[in-house]
Image (tube, rainbow, N blue to C red):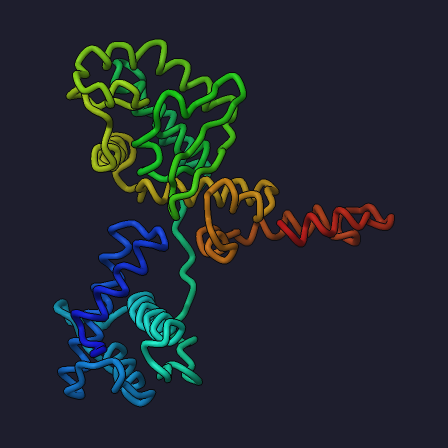
Length: 329
């Protein structure tokens, strides 16, 4: 079979869909692959992946590294890394399924472009100030404050908060069920007392009033409702966060995903184990959790002083279980 843009795109798209990737992720993968096909045709007059050699990949790497884009700047390392990894994954898939007999990425080192970017977060003080400055004067204020407390208190994604239903929340047991999160997997997320308190306030004082405008039967089961009587959409929550940020602190860099990063960073700084954080966030791989979180220097110093047997003024032998917990956390 000719591995041109059309054929390759079709079989790889079906593979990604069957693996449970979201439509947005599939779109981004295919966009990167189309870019590769365009450059192979433009630079080397090749439109069949069976003809691609290792030196062609090197030329593509050089193109990504040196080409200037519209604003005169060059592609970032993150963009270069993503595009190369996408194409590498494509060739791995083709080799594994015997569409090709040779992978041009074999023995190529692309590690220089594979730099893990530390995700942005805000300080605990900034996050607390932001939340506390949202005064609850009406039903919408209560709803918005509850959504933000929930997202910061659990680390759930904005898409997951948007589609929560009443049966997904168990306030008595203090947990919520995230249905079909990323990778189409369900997971249980614990609820802290503060989040439970705000959910109770919202359900008792705000939601019943918002429910009066709801006409769609399915929307009546959604936890968070919009001003128009519909389920609160992802876009609606994102716009709400932008609005609240401007009202409270216009200089604060805050998005739905930064709230998620901040949740993970702050509980790690307080001693949570990274494997447990991985489960709460719903990550498939541990290195994804590491990429989404980071410690600051003061946190590292605190950990050293707390756990090192020569720093914490306790010179007795430290139990093995403590070492294991530190290593895993």
